[in-house]
Amino acid sequence: MKQSLVKVARVPKVSVARMTVSETNLKKAAIRLLGQKLVSPEVQYIQRTLGGSATQQQLDDQVLAVRKLEWSKIVLPD
Image 1 (cartoon, helix red, strand yellow):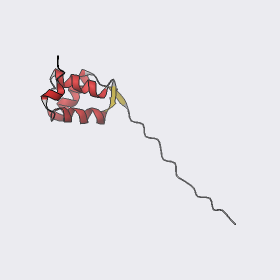
Image 2 (cartoon, one colour):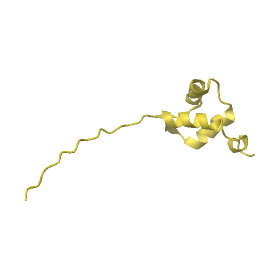
Image 3 (cartoon, one colour):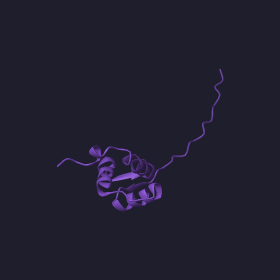
Image 4 (cartoon, helix red, strand yellow):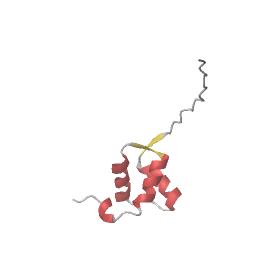
């Protein structure tokens, strides 16, 4: 029996750049997406949620989502 060789195309590896979840980056994303700045509890919530670094898409998603959350979920109790 003959075995036929099938050539498989290689899929290029896509790397997604990660960026720091800093107040400056969040401010820029909020201005771009919402047209206004985030207040400090919103910034702190996003930083707690995402950690030290995230992709631009994750950052954008969180900036949009934080405005839809209840205030009690954003602010940490004392």
